[in-house]
Image (tube, rainbow, N blue to C red; front, side, top):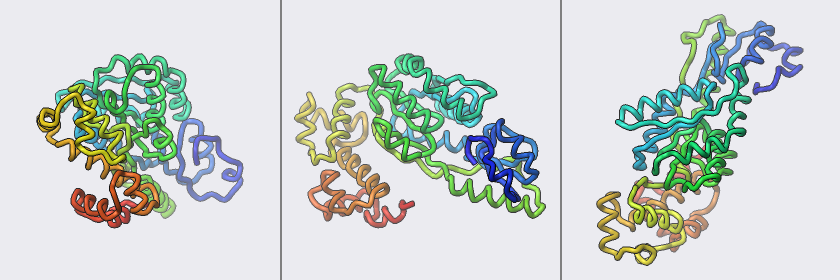
Length: 346
């Protein structure tokens, strides 16, 4: 069950139990069914309705770690003021940021405290200008955690109103790993992937227990997320050195076109040795290593998300042939492309 009122077939059918995304407008019709209910939306707590939801603290931790590992030391959060999951993710993200000795800037869309979750999320469509003004106040570079992918899409749309480069000025990470949203974003949106399958499976187990007359052991069960799916919105090393940032941007954009270090030097205003020294001092990496890392990240994405052959992938990622791709991939990751694809296939 989603956000609409109860369909007729539910009230007219022989229903023995319900797993639903429960909200204020559906709870009373559901109660009238007089059957056990398990809530997987978890926006509000309802008496005698057990909940199974994604662990919001663990989500915030994955997002923070992802941004921190990419060099961000300034942080921001954007969400929906009256959505409980957004509040939970904001609060734990703030704790992590402050524990690291940093500060957090927050922007939240309003909506109505009594509105459904859908109407609260829709509120973010109507304040893009205000959101853009807030974005323009953020120090650069900033790592920005948004409460979900819907919010991420809204925020990236707001960025079009201001002079901000993503991911160089603003690294953005969402939650849900919804391909339909993340891949339509420009740039594509990095996102924390919840374990939705486990949430559904555990909800079914809880419902089965209730149908057997066994009360749930916990009022709310929390399921850890799976991982971060990195896309373009966080494919960056956050640095304040403008020349180095410009060169890194060039490498990320052109690495899969088959560029080499000589091409990078030609693009830069620095000669080779000063450029490599600055790379080592600021990033602890060489230009060649960054080129390879960018290529391998793209190879991983194509292995996970497409059925392309290695020959096709090698042409898309700047390798001379599939054998060269396989050798470099094995050297960098410790496994073959085939093993990686099998391990990460859905």
